[in-house]
Image 1 (cartoon, rainbow, N blue to C red):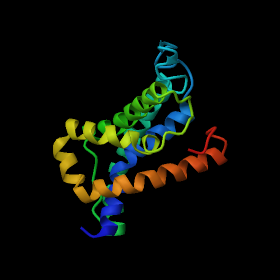
Image 2 (cartoon, rainbow, N blue to C red; image 1 turned 135 degrees about the vertical axis):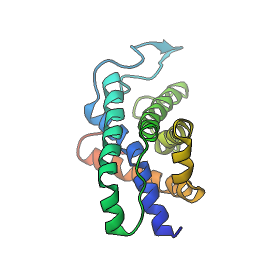
Image 3 (cartoon, rainbow, N blue to C red; image 1 turned 120 degrees about the horizontal axis):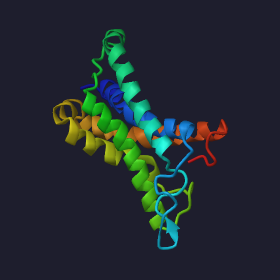
Length: 181
């Protein structure tokens, strides 16, 4: 697989995992998942992890996977690279795994004494990848191992932090986030 093809497939395959956290920021608010509970002297997750944001993120990832499925053949023909269609359980694994990864990162932040919005290098950029890929492999193994070759996984691990930092800076400049990371 040529490098350009690998990059395109990696980006396309990860879109249902890339979008949920952004959608959660836009639709968030409401009841926190942890209900205000604490563990020791800090919140379990914090006010930034809400049921509404989580649900909106998962729905956004699933909707995007559906839209990508509708245009996959046309995109493949236009660019000369066969982009994958998403099996329903693969889309669910990517979207829900992204949200779960972000929730687990919030839990880790609280356990390490970091406040909401505090920087946590590495974890902030790859939390959703570390959970969405294994969850997708568990829910849709045939699809996962066909799409996520070692080369695609390597591109995801390299590309994701760059995209994460870039989109967060844009969201910060647009006033959608309180910090640029």
